[in-house]
Structure formats: C-alpha cells, structure tokens
Length: 110
Image (cartoon, rainbow, N blue to C red; front, side, top):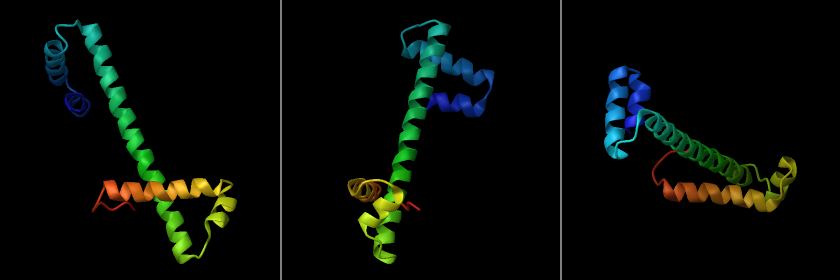
C-alpha cells in the first residue's frame, strides 16, 4: 500500500508522491483533507493488523487448551476452573483454533 511506502521511506519525495496519488484518487482534495484520509487509512490498516494479531493469539490459546486436554489429560472443566472462565469459553477458544487452522491451511501457528 502507498501509505506503507511513506512509513518505510520516510522521505519528502514519497510524501509528495502519495499526496499526488491521493489528489487524483480523492478527486482533488486539499492537503489538509489528504492528511485526514491518509491518517484514516493508517488507522484502518492498524485496526486490521491488530484484529489479525488477536485472532492468532486466540487460536494459540485454543491450541494450548486442546494440547493440555490431549497430552495432559486436563478436562475442559478443569481448564475453565483454573482460568476462572466458563467451559463454554474453553470450547470457544478451541473452536477459534480449529477455525484459524482451516482458514490458514498449511501455515504454522506456533
């Protein structure tokens, strides 16, 4: 994405390039509005990155729970009690792992 180019380049040339691209893209808005639109795009990108990170960590937690039940012979109830959550939440974390694994087939989680 062009916004990421500015972040990594950190130079005025890239900023001018982005402003020119934004000017065309947003129908000739002024510099102040371009800054707003760039900031909004950066915010949206950060939100997506954070959501992906949280989903990955949730899946890792679910995987750890599954492994604890398979290898450590811990029950969902024991895990729930020790974590001070309900057994439904344990099942939800485990399902989050299964969903992540299905969506990211072939990727290593942890």
